[in-house]
Length: 269
Image 1 (cartoon, one colour):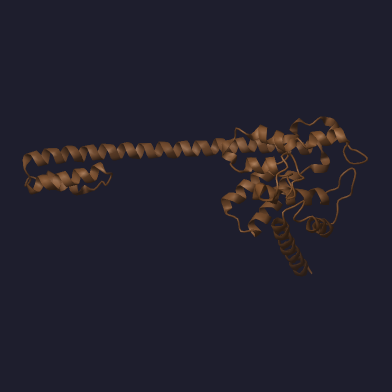
Image 2: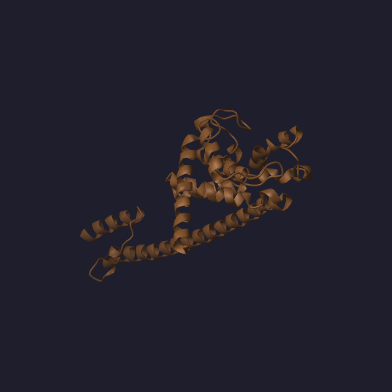
């Protein structure tokens, strides 16, 4: 009965997913014939199950690789669409890439997880995708700031961008970052007039990066400001226009960049 008891014990282990070679010990000739027969059958079944599990694992890996390739290809296509805005407006060429890079620097300064930083990077690249449908008139040089009728269209671009991207589930929180990057802590932003913590942190980071790049870039109606002047404007608007923690983090980022630049100059001298 000892062989039978051990056989039952091993079968129970196998049924719970704990595979081992212990079953093979019961196939020896010193075991009762019935025990040998059942043990051999169980051993063969275990081998077949393991083979199927291995094949399934390979299939899952292949599907994951395919999904990742599709994801990256889709991101590339949409990012290319976003970069195409630069071809329509020479004044904002490279804007999306700069915003994404600056936002990532702020996020790293705030010690956010790498996965979150990647979503913020995607949000930065795609934050103005809603401008794709803008009329050419909006991209024509204006002697002053955009006319009021165009401003109304501009304020719709976060919502339009979110609609364009809404079926790309793998964008995760980046979708909301696109939707909310013009919201303000005081609730006077757009399109939904969210306040403070209602605004996702990633969107608050993008808002700072976006505003800084806009202020330091030459536009038809204004010459780009010096970085220190733009930073001062951000600081004065912290808590109302922009999130104060994000502005503080960006201040630290600029200090690091300045220190690195000065160090490079000393080495060159």
